[in-house]
Image (cartoon, rainbow, N blue to C red; front, side):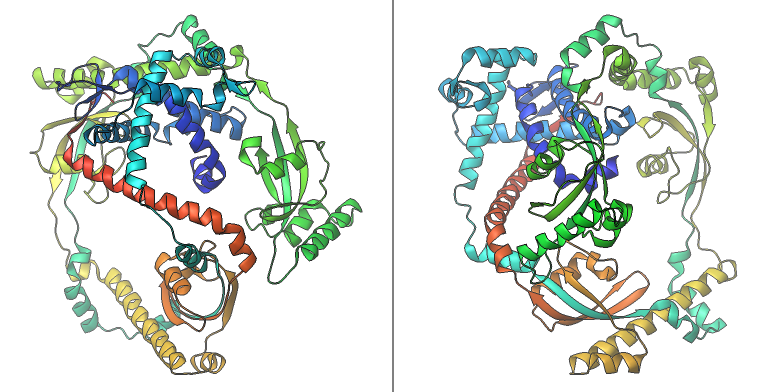
Length: 631
């Protein structure tokens, strides 16, 4: 699921705005107070700004709510706590709160003022609170009440947002993007490139490598450190998993029902339609009319049942992500796809195929495979899930405290880990030997480093790991050493052959490139060097092609798109060297006109984000930030 979210991040851009709004409306409150000592109720301290645990919890719950809604739409409500855990919501919340606090302090230092009048104006200009075309105080209060938000808290949070908005206006007032920058960006990123290339595989030259004892020993002496066996350590440890703490947490029916009643959006599953599609993209000099005719021809074949949808998708679709699986996209909701796409599928019946329709990506033909009507998951079905969620949240608050209590008991009463494990009903474990570079779960590099800085038998922890909080001791340590030549001879031989073959392959590629640059003919050179010429067409900066693996290397793509037609160079990827020549670069004027405005907005946003990121990085160095260990 996490991989899916990462791969489809652009599709969910709209949700990021929703999350930002939820963060403000939900009440991520920061109260400015004088200098203080971090107390038990303080979650985060940023300079003179204090963020309490209740404030942190509210912010966390809003971020959590955003991801729950997203996962609910994607998985029909069948998400797990593990899905949420992988998204590292806690760190996202901490970063968000810290950054807001830093910017708030900076705004006040800059002399920026926000009055009650400003807050009132912002509220009255929000269309969400409009009724019959104008602001309605009744609707405003009703919306806040429906979301469980106190008006004073909302207004305080909004005031902070206005401080930050005014700071941004001041920072960005001179930021501009020229027409030349827009055109240069388009040329560099959206120009289509055709290129030819040849490949020199390292493996093909291994047979040319001559191996003798003397050469191997010289290679070993030169690369001794490569064969060093690192310092190895072994641990005895006990784990305090979250489940151990959860056992003592009791959640009542009233608590689960209250959560269900106050979080209706968590349990609402919108209309979901499972679809497959065939995408016909514009290529070369095709007109829109030709594109439409091609789509209609495929549609007629489908309607006449001359071909199945899956066969047509594999044969004709230009969507490389879905064509090999018969055009299968999966379940989509209104917020996950373009408006034109949704409008053309929402009225179709199960099993129906849409007529070809156009979006900015090209012409689509869509098959509706299944329809799931919107529904609210009943309390009885989600009660256990809610109970587990609340239990987990409560346990997380106590987790470190419980682990630390056990640690202190072991330390102060000189208990062995075995005695402590028995006393607290935990298991004692012994790890295998591990190194700093290759720690074995549940240990991390930091934990191994902590052990290496102490003496054998020292009590360490509690440190959070993938299994839970660890309390551990280093029970043995083996010093680092370099093995003798005879002990690693076989590995030295493999490394030597690989190294020498790579040098030969690189040299051959360099010779090929040198002759090509001097005016050599690509076809004749390919025959001379006994390599095959391959070609890729329509390569863009954002569409790497497997056939030419160097297209996955940012630096190589930067060179290709920064140079003119006829550019010749070489690159390496894993076990091969590639020599390539840019045959053609195509500038699409119509595409440029279509994207010009959005590119300008993108470049403007990038410049503004850079200014903001640099400011936050600077402030983080200047301002003291403390995070309560309980988080």
